[in-house]
Length: 89
Image 1 (cartoon, helix red, strand yellow):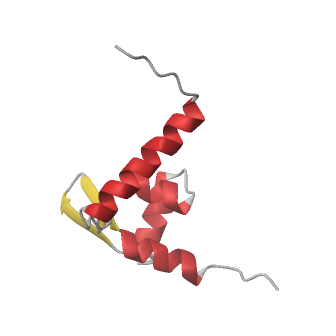
Image 2 (cartoon, one colour; image 1 turned 90 degrees about the vertical axis):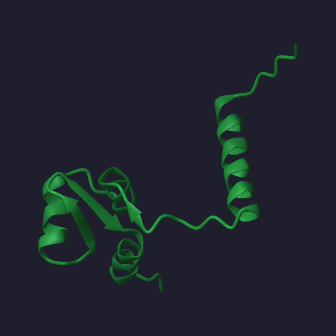
């Protein structure tokens, strides 16, 4: 048996490349609906209250298939970020 040692950064880069390769070869698209944790990560938000405000103001689209499950529309988050982008001079 061979043992290969990699630094963690090199391992993560390799995993990212493999994921991208699999997505490309199998024509896998990004999920339309994402979890609250993923939505918060993309928006750079750490507060559930901020997410509630974004939903209340209809700034981002979401679905609530049950009382405790909320999913966010990936495209609306990207649109929200684009809308609030500040352009460099």
